[in-house]
Image 1 (tube, protein in one colour):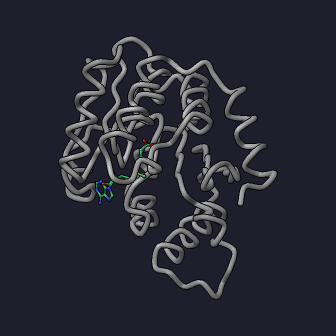
Image 2 (image 1 turned 60 degrees about the horizontal axis):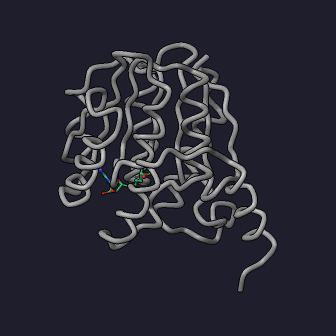
Image 3 (image 1 turned 30 degrees about the vertical axis):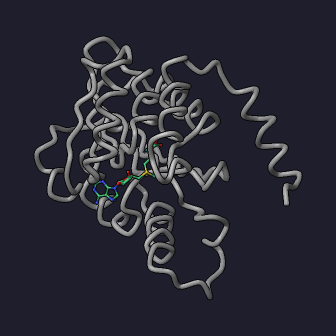
Length: 212
Ligand SMILES: C[S@@+](CC[C@H](N)C(=O)[O-])C[C@H]1O[C@@H](n2cnc3c(N)ncnc32)[C@H](O)[C@@H]1O
């Protein structure tokens, strides 16, 4: 049953824009062509990612979990001319769609897509980074934090999606391995003086941390 939260979310989403036409097309194609279109960030979170990126004007972005390219294209909006966005996708089928979507966007020349497992590919991707977005392989978040924190420039942003995991994060009896890893990630950031963090209860929970 729909409740007030659904209506409030839709209201907030409607007021968050404008959304470029090529992104609307990415969303349409993702719903037509993939089995789990709800993985895409969507309008509200996408506009927040674009805004955070524009505010921090990152020259070098790393994204883990491309899916069909929606969030990468949102983050790319903040790149200065010549800026780079590196994005990793483990599923070759969704990477196929992402490649098409990047090619028909204004950021074709700025985005490099890597297909394969993130842990294997990370050492090949040239840092340091001004903005990092974690949005794939939730169980790996704590390890990605350890691997990447020294690759994040002072003042840079570390964003991570799904950190509230469908409202289940705060229920200690729920011992799903994804939840255990996400709790560990949230605690790592809260206890680490190298970052200042805000957890936003938007969508599935977005953690926004700034490297001190
Ligand atoms: C939630 S989706 C990403 C959504 C996308 N960032 C967006 O907002 O449109 C997560 C993606 O991460 C990919 N993924 C999961 N584990 C991965 C890994 N270990 N290495 C690379 N990609 C991975 C999945 O195949 C999936 O496409």
